[in-house]
Image (tube, rainbow, N blue to C red):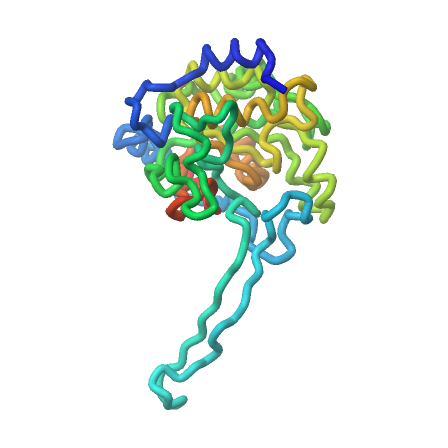
Length: 309
């Protein structure tokens, strides 16, 4: 089924195709650079740092519902093995992990989604193959994400700990949450959107955490495009609202962000401790250090984001 006219109308408004040249494979991460990094560094006043990542664990958030997104399988392959053969000398232990690259806290790369046979910037969807992975828009090409982060706490905006399942965050919600911070978004900033959905995972209810879920609605891509945001991350698994607002388009925000805008998006980010601190001191900006692991040919990558205030 073809995507509906309303989707294509938004796509035309937010498209970054050709903006950074016909060969560009990193999209809005072109907005990162020394100015963005220095702006982030100037946010550091107390030195308090917050980990925004889920632990990588075999009992992670995945339930087997999404093919291939297995929780980490950790195996020891060497235990106190004598390096020289003499156990009185140096002994080493080693381990390996098998996991879905998008199993826990992660970035979605631009090759993660396609429609009408194309990826971001018009590259063919066929450039993603079983043999090579993503030959175009691979996540290893990303610039290191070191910039100013801004937390938009939409749950607190509405006076709740967690938005209702299926709540579609609007551009007006983003405006309201931003107004509470007293900040203005600048090109190259990364926006973190808190829904409170992580509350389910803390309680051990993976199914309630997974779906249905609050998330970004279809009025928000134009908001991010107008402000030249470098990347967006949320504390949910589907990132956008699920079920979607309209039945005639599946995961439209994914398609608008990744294919049209070239906007990197993050999921399963842990934002509650940071949000409590921001609410306590009224400071919603911070240095965000969140480079993707440079897996060649990958369409996603685990990340350990750290916010330093």
